[in-house]
Length: 424
Image (tube, rainbow, N blue to C red):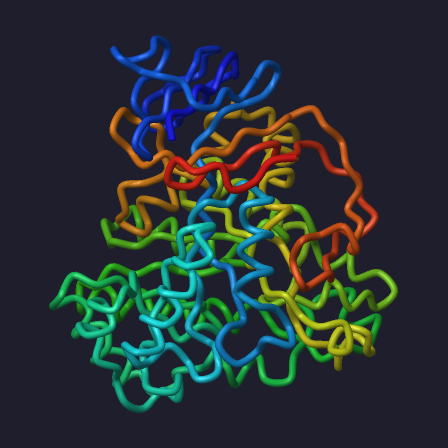
């Protein structure tokens, strides 16, 4: 369909565009910026006056809960939530049931996503069979099925010999390994940061060294094997400094942070709010400040939602017993805008953390509005305030630490591959 997006403020971090101009879409691609291409016949006009026209957001961590956990969420509900949040591409971790360790499972997930015709889904394959940490998966076959990287999700891989072999295998084929740094023994049964709040509330704690010890091992093995390593959901000041040092040494390492950890700290647990039971745990205010500094200087490449919908029964329990996780796809954009305002950051720089930078992590040619690129577009009102009401969220998971908060920035239209998939 030929679409004319008229009068919006076009922001494209990759091409350093930030100006009011028209955008023209033809045959599912970006056809022209500013002036209509010759012979262009408009089929749909979108009035974007007062709105921002940007590349669709790319989320590096969105659990879709299929297959196996449909009581928490379904592909249908989470795809609707994604486009409602302006997310046009997302990577989903392999910790489904069964895990994404067989080509058939990956192909089924990709097929289901294509039928729904909503956001683009990029599965992250399991690094080991069943995520058990013993036997490597057939990574080459999983890539052919559609996997873009390999991970253990939150499942421990305690055998460093297996991890080294996995990295060697991945490096041989130029594949990327995504790992979340957490020593499973030090973190065992922990639910909160090892700090003032956990001590006062009597909560089992997870020390920062659980992150740094695991991270040290990962970085050492990455240096040994030359693998492309992506560190998922960094949470501590010490961890940020280790990644910064690794990048300065020239290691091919990238890193992301959850939007929750950009804005919240252990203090937000308050009176045992189970919505703040997250993985990794919310850490100290000093850690939060370091995460923000890491985003600003490029140590941390991207902000993700860490979308992990959980059913109400698993959340409405005492803090230590509640399941970790929170919904996030619909909050990614307003929380990035909130961070940008607080840091007095140019909007283009802030949006790059959820468009251009995650696209580079994925090694995909997406997240920009270049002529000829796929027309994945998010059009939003940066000034619109709205209150986070669980019942109004599209995701099947309604739990978020931001319940009741007023946020600024609302998606008005989302286009995926040149098709209008969401409008409000």
